[in-house]
Image 1 (tube, rainbow, N blue to C red):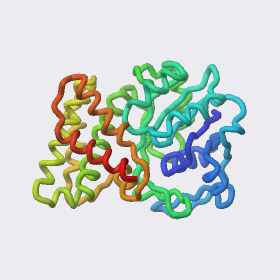
Image 2: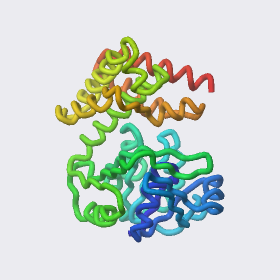
Image 3: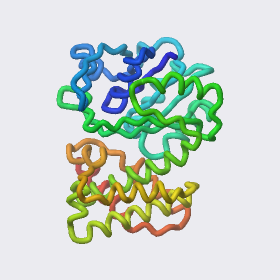
Length: 304
């Protein structure tokens, strides 16, 4: 299977590397700066098991040739419009596009551009970041990759994707209910991002502060009410696990949005929080805590 990995940051770099190590034909679509960095130093993975360096196949938008069987999109959500332009020449009649982005707005955006039959569901769970020299740092052993047809019909095309991905040295989950997995991932990451960005700290600091647990639970409840109104078929055991994970004061957690914010980078405010508020308004839901978070993030973006 010919695979194009759109992005070689922490997520794309890690999972793309594992696919390449498993013998898949993987090309990384990257910008000029990342291209030069990877050409010079290779793709470096720092994992709990040690350090590995790969010589990746690289491409820039201007040099893409031929169609790909699978395009995995791993960029930040605010870069999606440009990435759609970049990958367009690589999309052929049989190409499938698997976005691994935060939120859900990107699914409709990709479907409108390339067609509903082209887009499949995907998400990952990994604690990873880029180091100062562009190395991919896997912070914990967690490395899960979920995928499946958005309508649950995992036909022969999806079976081919599973055959390519399932032996790539990561924990793969071929799901026949990927939409619920996507809703639950959004519930987790948006709650985590909201409380960390609003309180400017990790969950341990928040939960050991006066009112911190009430804040986390309040944000969680507002988000759960929004996604349920939008079509999430609540799985009580799953939502309870998410809340328990977030509410453990012994385990300090932060979100990628919070880490980006503390470094002065652009953040996925509209895609992670703003979109929830739009959906809440559609159902006349009161979300005062999410509104406070949104104002906080807008002020941050104005001040960058």
